[in-house]
Image 1 (cartoon, rainbow, N blue to C red):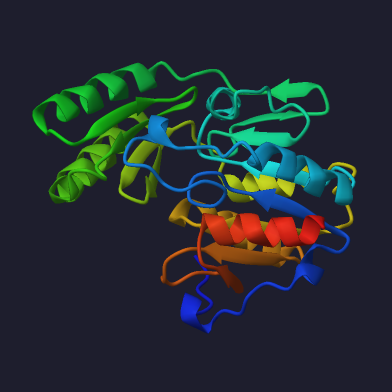
Image 2: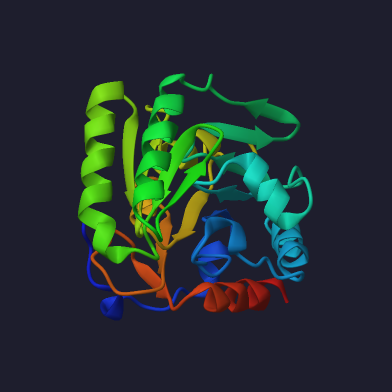
Length: 251
């Protein structure tokens, strides 16, 4: 992972970044505030109309790239998000321009789900989340379980061959062979994004591969939120700042 600098050294992103660019947006912690439970996030009614206005200004060059499944994204918005490009499950599944693509769900995920659920039963405050192509173990409400949760996930990754994904107070085992950087590179090969500069906004460690991909492709990366080492070259304070930035661009 490339490290650029700490967020306090990173400038506010100028709106000119989006001129002729393709915009890629993480969901949790970027467009919406993190919640204690993944099913408790709040999607403001004004968010979808805002994204549609931005999409029109960018002539369709906008995508949501999330660790959540596409089905989860649709449910949270209360609307099938087929107007925008969506890449879910850390780049494992895609939907755009009427075309959907996804892998076969590995049977090993059922074993992981049982082990994570057993862990959650024995450790109050932890939560197992079943996804389309992964299983996550959240310990946001049980910070003292971090070491045990990560050790369990590492052992299961070695046992099953599934990809281990560490995040903000969560560990996940998922389909191997993809990440958010792979998703950015794949979408950037297709019109109307091909030949433009990518701009990726994200907040988590899972977004670092996408930051690196965007910069390597001649674009920019915007870290959202708290201070940490990052490959990003710009910073916004949080989801409300992201929404305000997008609203300013859409005027």
